[in-house]
Length: 202
Image: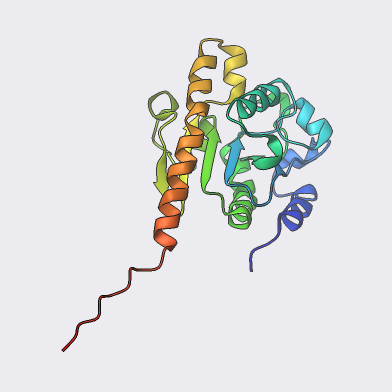
């Protein structure tokens, strides 16, 4: 039986699987549409997210909102989460054991939502599907993994630190509507009944 997002969120909020729980103000399970076709997975909560218990509410989140609006989407239509659900101290990179401790929660969220497209934001979420790749080489390139298409992208925060990446991130985001439409067509074709067999008259 697939756990509901509310059940997963409740488990995340009381989780003590790694040391990050000792320093958190709030765990940040994720937020958005439980039936989202597109799921965004970032790296970890920052200061603002830790205070509010919601993902992507700081400056990087504002940039994400702007990009979603540019392709005709809102945060209410997608689901946003991170590979780790508690803020690493000083906003450092999440450690392998921290990512591993949260992996079951992310697995459960993906199973509950069943997104058509997963967008990884940053190299730590990208590494879940592309462990030996460089984000500079494969960003914006969709690849299918079973029932889902994964699109690696730079983290929105990267554009705040390196303004030259802003246009790259915006261009990758602009591809999402077409990628989603192609996935919808493929899904519809797979679900369509086979054509009727012509009866032979003997």
